[in-house]
Amino acid sequence: MQITITARHFQLTNAIRDYVYDSVAKLEKYFDNIIVAHFILSFENNQNKVELVLHAPKHNLKSETIETDMYMSIDVAVEKMEQQIKKMKDRWTDYSNKQSLKDSSQFVYANLIEKGDGKKTVKIKRLLAEVMSVDEALDKFDTMEDDYFIFKNVETDRINVLIKKDEDHYKLLQP
Image (cartoon, rainbow, N blue to C red; front, side, top):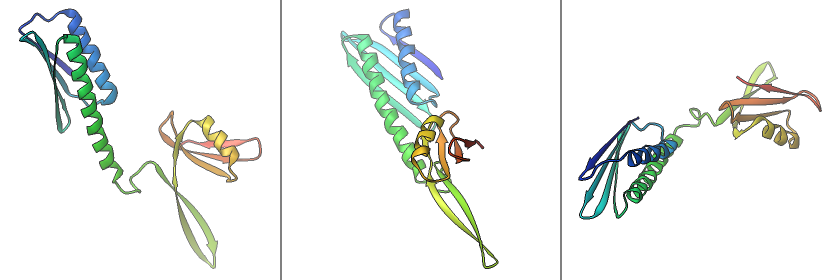
């Protein structure tokens, strides 16, 4: 991400510059795809004005504040930008949730094949893969009566399958 700072009607100090860089780090926590962050800091009529303009893919966001303290105005502008980023991210996730279930990595299709009358019948079972660690999956699997448990591993962000071999032994499949 490229960060630019413009100071109008006052001398930009290293402390303010460092404070701006630390504030941008807060924004990166919420959204990784920020291309350019442009801060316009100005001192007019004994007031400190901060304009923050962010350029992200397909979006330009802007926040403005006027406060008596420069640090306070930077904080308020960053807070306003955080709210805009969260709102934008919610729109993106709402759109992506409208995709079909086949495209979703949260759903797992387990194919059960039965042979009967010379025909092969395939039953498809749709499961919601819960996000959890292997230890959490083992604890939950012990309370269930199924011979397998499908979950999304939080460490690898992939679908895993726990299979019960006997009372004390399990097998973990990681594709």
